Length: 251
Image (cartoon, rainbow, N blue to C red; front, side, top):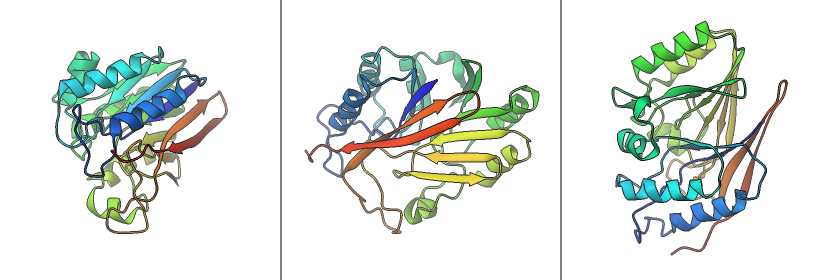
């Protein structure tokens, strides 16, 4: 099974320019064109679909049209720049909204996938209880978790200091107490990182907007590359790579 993960696309309303003077509709379109002829089974988009805090159904509908053009199954979860309820309405996830949070589990080719809502910078107590029950009752020995925020210290001075997931230790401790293996795929940090803590493997995927230089406490742009992650899952091996392409010129 092959999966492509895209994250932090930050799409504005039509004609809206970002503070970085980057045409995010064009950068996302470039990624879609890049992967269109690649061999993959599923696409997963891990949050921050909207540019800033402009939650507009037109943005989600535009993204949906782009995703539909790939003719592949896909899943979409919210980030801190999204409205989970509006996202659920557009993408048909009405039955997955619980107390304002959008989360669910899904079996894909015999593997257990878990989609977490961390959009308010915290994973709710209700999700903690739900996740713990799923893990405890499942016969699976490995789980694939997709969420927007990394549930751990990443090593990006700016993001770790200013925009981390709150109560992340509680989430990690929930996983660490189980004798099972977890592969967590995230975004939010606008960089590429891998963090392994015992049985928990966290993969941070770069943005299709811009990358943040993790060496500085201020939000410095690292380069003009945009990226996406490929994930290959087989019975005994998990392989993952990040691919980059040149960003379009500023608008």
